[in-house]
Length: 386
Image 1 (cartoon, rainbow, N blue to C red):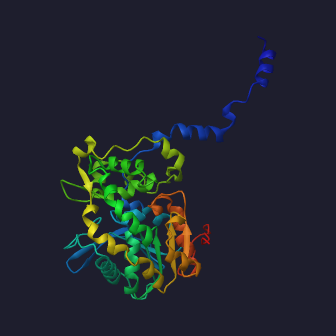
Image 2: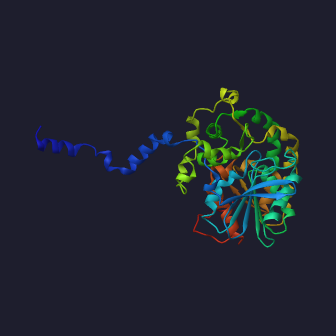
Image 3: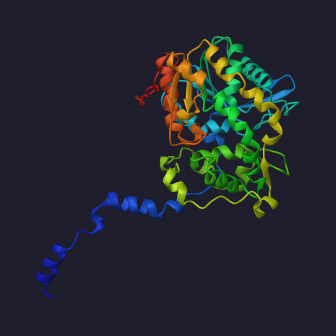
């Protein structure tokens, strides 16, 4: 074939994909997705400035702190979680508004240790929050209190106890649906593995089971939910010794937001190992708290929650994973404009972990709208649901 014929033939062929860098990037991204997805844990100091042990009487409460100026956003986790559940949200919201963040390990959770870790009544937890804030915060500091699930119920209970409270928010907890869900809670807890042989295995199970849909969030959050059965210490204390790719080698990584598992992708993922798998028999890590043994407190956490929430006089926000979670009393209250509501669909119960940027935008908008905080950037503003 002559050079002229080759030239003519080449001109009639489809262009090489080399000329399409965007397409190549997407193809490579798709092919390498499973390779780049790892479940190695990440340390807390990528997200918070420091931790602090707050001593109240004979109890020691562990808190995570970020920021040095502005109002204080106090964050309360749900049952079984820890203050690290707010890590990704904290990283996002600090780029949006000028504020400080304090994420608390509640009694019986995380690195907090008390004389009675079994006393998880709503009154006790609310008194703990009041004492922690009183021991760490100046009297004139504006406080904005947000809680998820059980932590949301505690936030509502603690709100009247905090004199400098400016705003209140609860995430995915409504009295009616919470009370209905209690009947199946023990079945759910029995379906979980009793333990794991490694921290990475626990992270993988949480992601593949759908408990946490954001991989990056799970990598920092899950170590705060399990403990080493040999040392009785939280798994966060084992990360540096067991994993070499910790934060020292990359102090400020760029966290890819495509690590959020979409609904269609989750359908193709293999199911997590069953609770009775061999991994549980070779366990080294177990859940930090046995939630099944807290059943006596469940009713008290949520009974009367809707009325108590509506009666708090400061500006309020209710953030839900779906409108079906709204009960009658809150529906009436929302129509009367007694609180701001935001719905974030396509995420699980751990809304703030699944879509931390979206939740951060909602909270930041709430705080700027009510002049609690000054914006630090031109972040996307969210609008309340109608």
